[in-house]
Image (spheres, each protein chain N blue to C red):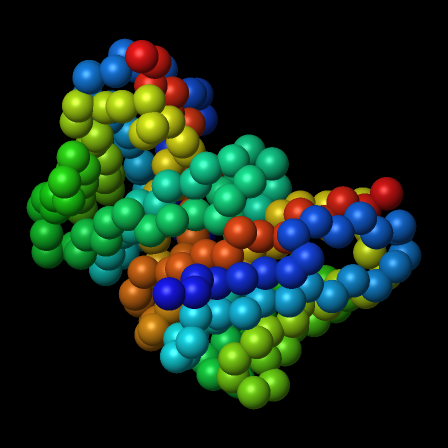
Length: 113
Length: 114
């Protein structure tokens, strides 16, 4: 069956541009997570959705980061006025319920020049 | 604050040997612990989950132990193969959350040489 998909796989943005990263979770998965992964590090939590409700956004690094999941399925992570320090791989994961194993997408590698 | 530590140095072993990776954590009493595998350019893939009341769990050539007194988990791959070469991540649930939000270690890279 289809896994978690993310698009685009690669994104190059000039500093100051806005970007939007898309995540298609596994159908029926209630929980959706966004993580940020720097080179050589483990993923770091950004935000969590249960269906369409954003229940935890404590990991978003600044108010330039915004995520939504309006219909409880596809999610978009938006970064406004990108900065060089935003360069990283952005991973999306979904799971059936909280506390279960998470299924990750391939990630979007964002490079801000 | 909660902290997870994995060996940052790569682990190089010969094919056929057992690889043992370590995950230590502090300031924490997690209800469970997960291990993931990550290949270059790909997202992590779930391998095993072990709960606090389980001492050991096995899946094919994989074995995980969970010592809540030592605050440590060991991940073993027996009869290792070059295809096992990857980065292995340890993850625990955030202490104050029951949402499944995970905190990851930095990962240990395993290289199995033929």
